[in-house]
Image 1 (cartoon, one colour):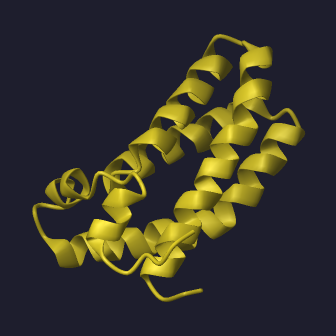
Image 2: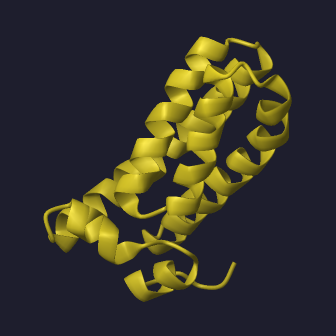
Length: 124
């Protein structure tokens, strides 16, 4: 993945760090806390999202991807936020083929984000 040790490294990996810090009131320490929470939550949410999708519990899936969309936007992981928004809309539209196409990309991107945060935060 390449070493991720600084906010600049996160930016290179596609995070909008400036926007994430702005959403944290301009406070880098708060942003770091939010990144830590996102990393920890992601480790639990990835298997949960996969499970509810596989069980075809689409209402719960919609709730989970809605939360993912907002959480990732708050840390500047905009690509993942967009993928989650697309999945949320697919559930609302009952567009199961779009959900099937998009779920793996979304979960793969979620794993990328969690791994990047683990590296930044020294958890790897």
